Length: 352
Ligand code: GZL
Figure 1: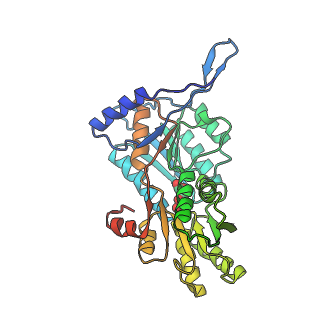
Figure 2: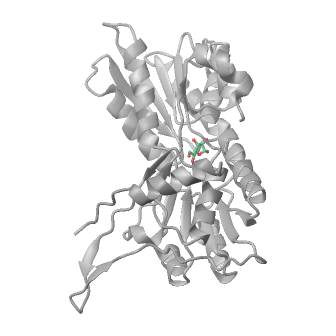
Figure 3: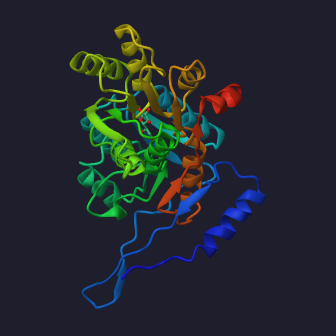
């Protein structure tokens, strides 16, 4: 059996937070539905996530262990700074480590946080799989785990308390929908896709969502789909390869899972002697300033936002946990899309 929470308690709670002008109040939350199974005594047991109340006292700040995945992109740099700034702003002690794109290192960092008995663990998992064991260790140690920016795929979803980030499938759908709405009727388009890190939640979601966005429209065919790692270098190398293999023929659109790879692809297209944004259209995700600038000068055609400024919502969730509040299972950040006109209008107020 599964519970279906009404949301009444959360609605009042967030309303009070808004009245109190609290920081990091989420725009959209999804409440956790509890799986109720009968225990050996026949009593119904709700398998609760590790929402152990961190033992913060007024003289001892809450300690959060944060295991960042790497520094692979402009988005990551903004995300990183947002987490660091929000912890400082809210008086939370941050124990920060960077896994430099290694899952092995990230697991070792989580184990170090468990040994240090931090109050809460937060991390951006490089890939979706391979976390069951270390998250079980965190739960057994009574340390709640908050997923920041990327989800994990584990057997038991009570091994993590909440996910704070984007809806990657919707980001992919937005990219696909824009293409169907702006492409010429009756013309065929060959699409090359440059994916982000293999088996990472953003790459999986953006790929699935994009396919959904163009589904049923027979003008489009994904003629190549290659795997990058969210870095500019990988976008440039992969785009060079695609142009070499095809002689620049048959690729009308390049869909990149993030700005850094898209900007790398732009350089490769220019090197090849073609005009990015004209001879070959480019769609990207993140909406960092450098991508919006490329959009404004016509080297990109459309950019889907993925909001990296998750720090305030992460630290608000930590604060709520320390006050014994149950967290929503998902806290979805708000984000939009950018055409060239929207980029021109908003570039001056962008924070990253
Ligand atoms: C998305 C994030 C992705 C960004 C990339 O939440 O995990 O990783 O889209 C970043 O720029 O490298």
